[in-house]
Image: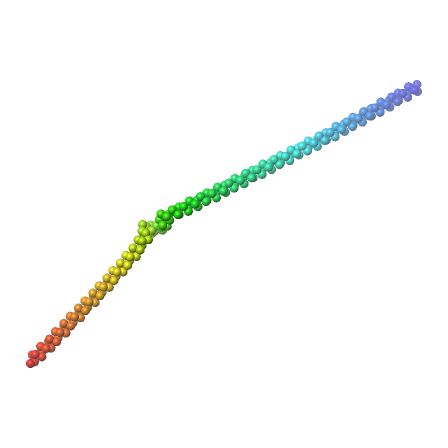
Length: 184
């Protein structure tokens, strides 16, 4: 009987050891699973972080592209404005040149003179006409000289008056002579 009990004890001990080993194996398996899960979570987190970074980079690139497009549009608008200003300046210069070629630069003066009711050489007269006006002024001066000649004629009339006075003196001499004859 003692041998049978020993075997039973040995068998029971063996079974307990086997059970312990199985439990340890299960625990190890569970630990491994947990580790795997943790690794998977880490991998997922890393992937999510990478995706977020990629999205941020894409957004930044899009923003940069939009900014570049806006800058290009602004530059194009500025260039267009500069071209328009140049065209306007060229048109103004052409108009000024054409006005001076046609009117000799008198158009603005004519407008001012028409408002004031004044007419000068720019309203249909040329520079030669201005010289003719000066000649007319000289003619007026000649008329003044004619007036001076009239004054000279008046002086001649005064001389005639002096001649009349001489005639009166002759009459006096005759009278004196007559008186002398009467005395004789």
